[in-house]
Image (cartoon, rainbow, N blue to C red; front, side, top):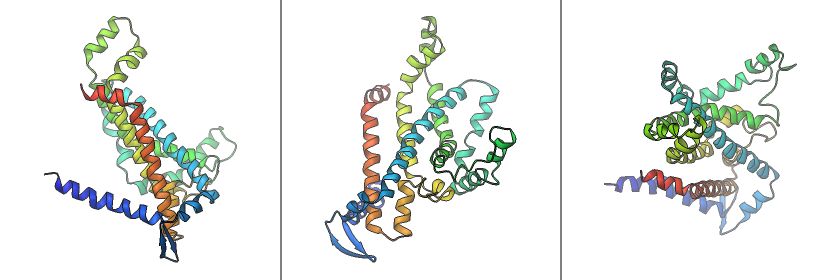
Length: 283
């Protein structure tokens, strides 16, 4: 019964991964393979100063994006778990940022954040918060965190809904017992709600990390890696090296590093949370 799924995984996941790993160890000159078993592609990466900037930006993108997405999602999910007419409507509307196509989202935010005609910078100037419009996507110091903010707006709604469902499933008798023991709202959330939703929290964190690592359209359409590679991340740099510069070997080496980095982060997170995962899964 599961043979078709196994075959699909082997065909569409394991096969391409093997090909990329093989190509990363192959020297490619003018589109022609010139020998297998060399680490020239990895040596070229370590000698490339842009690569280290890309690694720094990728760390901000993945770690900063995941932490903020889950943190904001938990806060919003906690609010949505309350029973009221307002939260009922918000549960239905909050998925709008998530269902809008990536290209539409990227283009809309790109225009809103434009340094000269963007409505966000103009609004800040009109309200007196700044003396001139801010070029959020043109300032190397702001561009990465600006992309992270847009990323959170895009990915957070689904995280919030998942955690909202988990919070609403926390047994009422445990919350009532804690209330009778004198626990305040924060203590009930910290010592009753969080342990009960640990499994869901771990799952959405891992899923968010994978989503963010694979995200390409948003940063590429909004900045193209600029200005001066200030917003270049692994996904966009791999694309640039592959389809603009045709450095297939170097791009494959970066893909391998990107995969190993993601696997290491996910494995470390699951190892740290293994106890809460096991205890929640057994309930």
